[in-house]
Amino acid sequence: MPINDTTGELNTGLHKRMIEALNLVARSARVRASWSKKIRGAIKVGEVKEQDGEVFGYIEVGGTAFNEHGQPVNIAKMARAFEYGSGERARRKGPHGIGKYIITPTNAPNLAFMGTNESAGHLVKTPIVHHPGVAPHPFLAPAVQENRAEIKQMMGEEFHQYVSKAIRVSWSGNR
Amino acid sequence: MIPNNTVQAAIISFLKSKATITALLVDNAGVAHPEEIREVEWQGDTFSYPNIRIDLGTQTDAIAENNCEVFNIGFSILIFSELYSSKEANVMAGVIANIINKKSITSGGVHFVRVICTLVPAIRRDERTWRSELICRSSIHI
Image 1: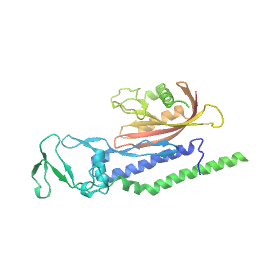
Image 2: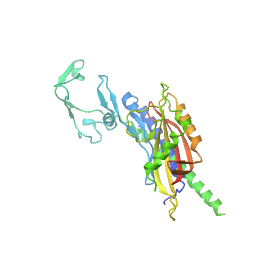
Image 3: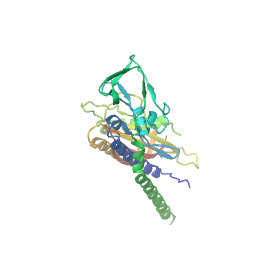
Image 4: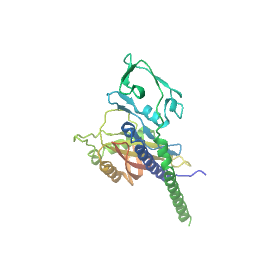
């Protein structure tokens, strides 16, 4: 049943609740991403918008940070890799598909990095790496899940208050 | 309908015309930035904190049954601060609320009839920024 919110009161209430909801999710996500200073610092509560009678909001994870060598790191790509996993460990098909992905140097003939496993402690130089990807370490979806019930309750309360008030106003106006 | 840009410009000029508000736009170095009242999607990359941003909502016909040119509008006034505590963002939102809440204002040729505000306490927009918000609704006409 469409609600005739002519005064915009319901919309304002839902807008306010949506800010609270986004804040809850962002807080949980920051706690869950506490292992990465870059990702944690890039979680932002976006502005709440209204379009075609719907109120919606979003959490942003993006921007650029710098690694220990002063090179720029795309936080959005990094966050996506950890949220869904990447390479062979991806839970969702990413820009490279599922499976090992290739890394090649862009500014030098070889990639150089400190090795792991059998190459641990050695500087490895190679023109190509078949990277297995990173295991998923989700922080956004669980944050939404953790707060789902509370958000649902908050929105329900707001709607209930509005309808109760509308009935009271209508009732007193008809007497 | 009143073009969005006209409404947005009217709100921004109204806020800029209030010395009580612009006096609060002083950065950590003590430099005043009265220009830091802009639209929320402003694309520039040089700005300072604290700042005020306007987020315009939907405009709808207030009285569909006749030809009166009165429209309902919603907009948000967002206050961003980068201090350690939320105090600055909350104080600024309170100052603005006291100036516009339940008031009728005229700016840029647009009349806002009784602006009703809802004050939202500051939240951490990100790890370094606080954001408080005034959700406003009003009827407007020229």
